[in-house]
Length: 386
Image (cartoon, rainbow, N blue to C red; front, side, top):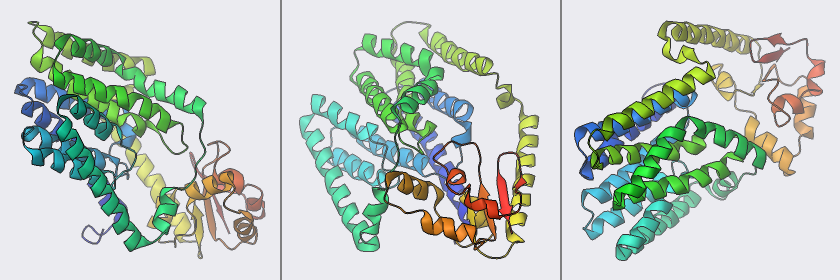
């Protein structure tokens, strides 16, 4: 942020680098495995198309996960560059271990990779596991030295879980991938290729892990990103190694049809309409500027359920909405002091998002906010100002 001049923009720039890096490393890995340029590019296009269409809200969002995926894939590429060299498995373990310090929940690739290596090269699997564990241990020690015990407190912060939400939303996220997943699974079984088996193993590990992670509050569609990456690698490898002439066009057509049908069923045609989308984003930007101005013109500290608004309004950081609410629900945080400060009018402005359910700041502060004037309401937010 010191270079760019704005922290959120800097974070989003890093995310774009990670997203594009992931899109670049998918065909780079496929080329290392002997796939031709068309098949390799198809894997990258499948990843990009599904991410942009199905996960569009997460492309460019301020979250380090895409960068972590790019670093994970870099480790995989380093191994496949020289799979017979002992240093390759060590390098892969070190790089994938570092990736977990960017985002700690992307476990499917290292887990699937060490299992696959154990089947085909046990010494390499032990070298990879040892390098990863040593990297993780040294990284945790460095974080403790730099941040103290607060690092582990933050890492182990409590959250609520819902098995029903994990099952319902997790499967909904996977719906657009049904046709490519079936094609890839059948192709991997028929190919009898060890790399196809690896990508199938990766998808098989990523699927249940993604559904389990989705049970946690605050986890969304990013829980199935590893499934998309496995699918893109697997379909690209299938296209490059299929023994059936003409199957490549059928695979491309089936994946494209799956995308088009899903968009049609979801009635989200705006994805393909550029001008209305630009107009919508311009309207949102104008509304955001109005909200920032509203926060700025009211002196004193503020609480924002959308922290970026307080950041842009140059308000001091007072409350972490998500972790505070989760701490209250877990019984390790006491909300009485905050409620008293809100009721006393200590905060010049309070921004909440109504209608998101019971585990929100809006619900916790509802009674305390009755001492404020009627809120100024926007499309999805309410601002209580003194």
